[in-house]
Image (cartoon, rainbow, N blue to C red; front, side, top):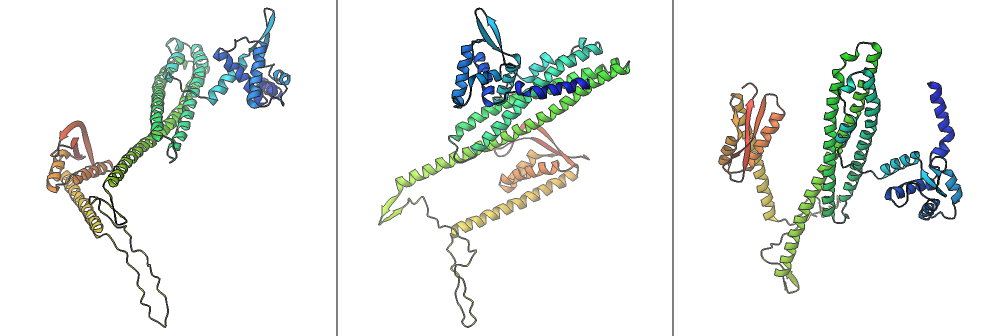
Length: 445
């Protein structure tokens, strides 16, 4: 066996010049002929004129009509890529199976296309394991060699194409974040459709994993049947290990693809939100400018805005000296910095805003402490009741909402309390706020 494998490798070393295209022109010629046959432009058994016309197309495309000898190029690919056969009173040419398979691989790699059928369809047709297949080790071996091994290539090809498509679309999505993107809203809508398709494909891949688990259980169920002899069990064990190892690799690939899709989907949602707020900002700016143009007046060489648009001074923080003191021990320098004017109304508004924020934080902490004390007594807390109680006392919806988030986070990080959540709507004292039923309990209660 070792000797035959060595001879095969030596044969590859001697023949690589013939079995692999040696230049750009040769590969493109074979692919172009294959594509014309697929498109129906020439017959599967084509004429010498078809061959020469395609060769002219290749040389014209590459602009190498003067530097390439047609006869030399034709001879380079005649051995493994096409054959000549007699046809009536003339000769015809046809691509070899090797050439057609090579073209399929090249075109599939350069222009991947997500298959419309989910991968689970391929599984059910090629990987189906019946009771008859498990009757003997010979039948199981046959299923493994002819069904499983052929299905592996189909599965890997499907996943690799999906992975490349996700990576390509994610890279294109990054281009939308650039400020010079043309019509980003339309591009975003196109990407939404693309990622919806990818989501369906990922669902199909996940379904295949469920099918894989069922098939693995079938294989494991006949373990005792093939334990009669060491040789038979060794064959069975190799099949089972091959199956498990292959799908461990597939599981990792699917998880990586799904993670990329989720990341890209998150970027897409953020981009949609950004565009939405930019659009709102743009509309508001246009309304403001339109109103200013209609209501502004020109008086004594100056533009006066409508009184509804108050003038504001530009804020400046006195963080540096505008007059640099001169250090001179002989004279006493009285230079003082010029303090810029500030908008007193704005500063007061900011001060009151900060005070309100601090007060809300303080009250949120107090109510959370009260709820913690109630939990320690073993009492089960209905948050809707507490929400109404806090809202009535504080006259502020922000505090009970913050308390809710704080309690959820506290329960997630604690082993001493937990939340029971039911998707039933409960009304609050504010008609604009509806809560799901949320019961907070102590683990000891």
